[in-house]
Image (cartoon, rainbow, N blue to C red):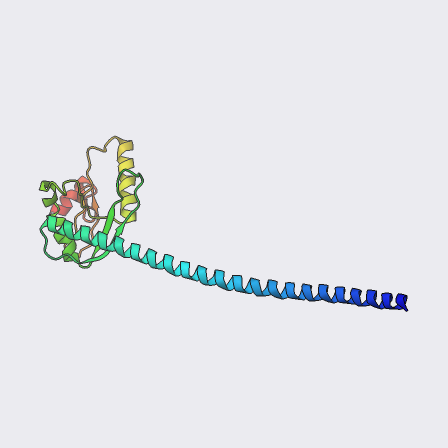
Length: 199
């Protein structure tokens, strides 16, 4: 009977032990899943808050840069003694060196505003505050490449000091090419053509 009782007790103890380990495993799994979910939700909400905060700070910085550029432009307009300048776009390019700020590319709302600024840019030379500000009309990329190629050719020929690049807006509608200051159309090819042309 004691051995029977001992066997029953051992069997109950082993079942109780296996049941407890099973319950512990289930509780551990459930707690792990629960903690993972809680931690994931908490991290997700914190990351969302940080993203919102960072995006709002970036937007504020962008607005400050634009307003700073516009205030500088307003000061420059005052230096040029121009009353009304409307700017469509203002962008500061990155500088190649840390010593100097990058150039500012301004797109004007109308051609009249651009012409007014380009006409008044000489006034800056006399101002102590704006004497180091330079205003130039920007050329398209293809035109700059062509100019650079022409300069290279003239240097190779040794004639770089004999020529100057000048841009003139065409007034008339007739299409004619300018070659070395002479019209390409109606250009006399020989002495006899020249005489025939003048008759």
